[in-house]
Length: 491
Ligand SMILES: Nc1ncnc2c1ncn2[C@@H]1O[C@H](COP(=O)(O)OP(=O)(O)O)[C@@H](O)[C@H]1O
Ligand SMILES: O=P(O)(O)OC[C@H](O)CO
Image (tube, rainbow, N blue to C red):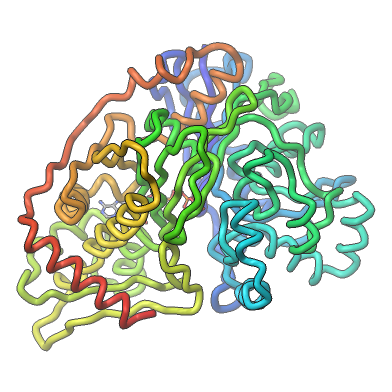
């Protein structure tokens, strides 16, 4: 019994075949182009998304020495919020996907906020009026593609996040569905009632007939077209990638939290059956939904984490490879205290300022590549501390002090040690760092009735390395106070 996990991310599509014991048997990955048609706009060509997903899925099955008939179930984890509208008759998208990072609807959101609509949005959806989420992106497409709004009202067009689009493609147009975690990122879903919100559809101008059906995260999402992988494989698990990572990190108990360091950083704190409202501009969202029962989370989303390292490499040319960042940072003069606020696409939680841009403070004639590299890596620790401080004041329940980490940047020991130091708390890195794919595979296995309950799966989580905090409290506080002054000066 093997499971195929598809991890359709912002910069690449990955597919991993897991054994029945959830060991990794094979991995295939393919990057695809990013399109930036205007400043602050980010798009994906859906033919790239689909062809790379299909290709890596086939490649992973082949690398594992298997055929489609050996795959018992498919699980999908996806970049969230990214918005697709397609023609139900042809399956063809009517516009490129508008990616979660895209800020083109900032003015729409600001206008709705000025009209006093934010509390209604937050009460129902747990989100904030920010261009990050899907609804204003969908309305933008309907307003800019000729005839689209009328066709959407008539039920000819389908809306979806990337999971829905992949399910549609994989099933040959037989299933138009999403799971509750993805629905919770659209700004159209009432997370308390567990249904699409008519009030939000009206306010944000997204016609109801275009919305997908919402299912559990471990459920029946149809079977693949037999010609794709040589067999009709059931799709049994679906979750947004950060929620899938929460499952893969086995954060099943209220109070457990994980933080994933990829392009951005996303920290989720499990709050159990209780949807906890935030007073600190965190998001209230669904961590996973099983047997019709949602488990909620508080989420802090940072838009730039690993991307700051990409900027050192591609923008400044200071390094050739991400792995060179930490050795360079180690040679920095620690007395210089350079602070980098990487607000390249605005600031996410807890500030939510789509308009502000990045800044570097404390430059001297002696500042060089090493100090910039150090400030870049440190910015990830400080941004996480801001999120966790906000979570601690929002969440009154029992709280783990340990943070479980994963994602590409969690490979950097220096960054994880600084994170532990600046949090003043341990940071745990698991043996399996493919937690997003693992979470998708587990959900699929659960949905197919092949894998045991979450409590049993949680026992399989194994620690690879714990980073204990070493910095003394006075230095920690002084450093974080300096960061906060830099933030104040930036926003
Ligand atoms: N050793 C490292 N040190 C610092 N950053 C790293 C390191 N390895 C990878 N990264 C960063 O991690 C990110 C890639 O992580 P990944 O989880 O694959 O991201 P995503 O899923 O968002 O595409 C990149 O932004 C890269 O710069
Ligand atoms: O594709 P990733 O890993 O950068 O994750 C993107 C997030 O889901 C956006 O909310």
